[in-house]
Length: 629
Image 1: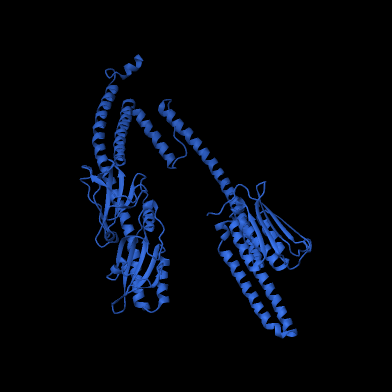
Image 2: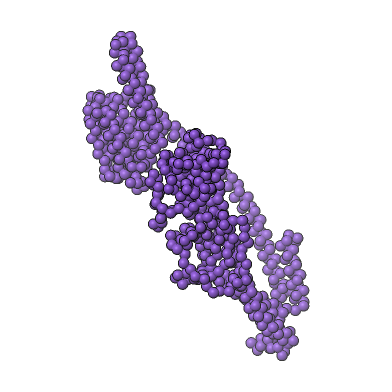
């Protein structure tokens, strides 16, 4: 300790005295410079952040305005096309133009063309022939292109979906006059943009700006109501008062453009006492946002805005103190010889980093500089060795990835082929269930007609009527099968309800008595397995109708004690030999294939003159999905 005190005593060493002087001068300089530069940087950063928020607000407003203007322009283009190319007496062509506009802009809730008598002559979403004389879009649209913020209930002929948070029905209507070649107004084209589209489009624009989580983007209407923003603010009026703060007195307004200009950034106090930083984009006269009376603004808590500036000030202070202390320490401890050797070592390390050399030139001696050079050399050797191992490992990984990729591609190809095969089998079963049965009935009728034509011509007219009925019935079954392929009633209402409707139609069509019962858990099944079970029941009932000559049919859908679903279909008909083969008939084969497809156990018991019983057991499992009521 005494030795250390002597070493730090400025009276014993000129180098130590100079070192203490450098340290004292630097500390004073660092504090003054950090305070002055930090304050300037803090103010500059705050103003720069405000300008950035203003430019971002302007950008958001411009893009929203352009989106609205583009849709108004599309309505104007449709009006020009209807007035110059089509004429007023081509309803199909008028609907085609409106349909094209609806396809191009699916966000339109409705599109309509009204004549000068305010009667809708063509529309997509409105009732044709209705009067729109009192509609604001017709009144304003007959004067010129118009866009307006509409408040009110839904139209009598159109039911709008409820909006969240109890918001009133509001929308944006667009209209443009239709003029003939002489320039006379012959009609008005109108369309409606739902508020949901405005909200979703604005939110998508906000997402593209990558704003800080603390910054909130709002769209306000002419009354100050928040149309787009956080859920806590939507539907409420923006209530704030300006705060006397000079932080932005020297900032200029954001550069204006041809659509909007952003106002100066300012602090405002909300009703709850919170102070926020606000920038608003006031649209220029004639723009879509100005016509609607909307404005866009960004809001950020003042604490968040000041936090960045304060962090920069503290960072400058600590960086200045740290750099100064390090420099002062080097000035006290360094000597000319050490400085020269450090320079040599630094140059050697830089050459290695830039690839100009492969090793570090080690300085002579055993002091800190020499040990530092040795450490650099050791680290460099380790890095070079690890780099070689990393290259080898990378090559092995690339080879493994290539092999695995080929395997995945092969498995994907096999999966696609299996899906195609399953779809082919499904189509074959559906064709057998509908078209094959209908064609068999038609073939039987044709053969009977040929015999009657030869042996009993007088009975031919009655049998022709019957043949026509068979053809109609077959067509109905084919259409029902196609409708079933297109629409999925089983998934909508559940297996039990779908079977109840199908059995009711079967009983009404055939006159057979059907005893149907189902239990709640099994009846609620509404997934792909339920669809397959429904098709099995349909095929079984067709077989009963065509072959069984039964008087009573029993259908049971129940829950077994072991958690399985059980389905049974019994009839008191003529029966058949279930062990015999039936070449050319694929009904039983199709039933077994469908049961196997869902992992169900199927058994068919029948004998001549003893009726037929079909039983099917299916493991429902914990993942059963019920129909949504």
